[in-house]
Length: 161
Image (cartoon, rainbow, N blue to C red; front, side, top):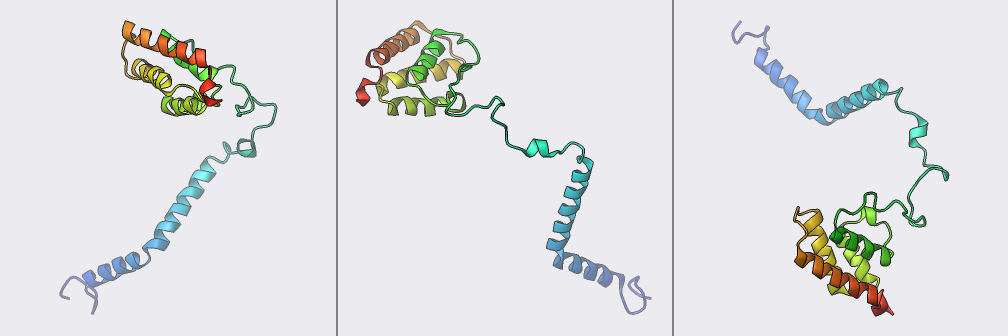
């Protein structure tokens, strides 16, 4: 026998034919393998999966909705005057869900609520620098933010009316 195969069938042809069949049915094979993995994982974690985890929260559970005031926001006491001013700005503008918004989204909401865009931008920029940019509160930041906050408090959204 030449070529190392059986009578009339070289071994290389058998291997190539088998690989061709696997390639032709690759989608079915991959799908089957994925389903098998999902089933095995499902059986392995069957005790951990309950219908209770899939249910929606009941009315008596502590959930945050737009109708509920967020009395626990902010969760931590502000660590500096810039953060205090930013939080006060969000509170006087009565922004919904500030804990799930970025500072830029809060800035946009405060401006839409009718507050002075320049003052809002001053407070937000300083807040971002101090809170996320690891910058220290400088007297310049402090003075600018306090002046901007005074402007906001004096207008209190009057530009919207």
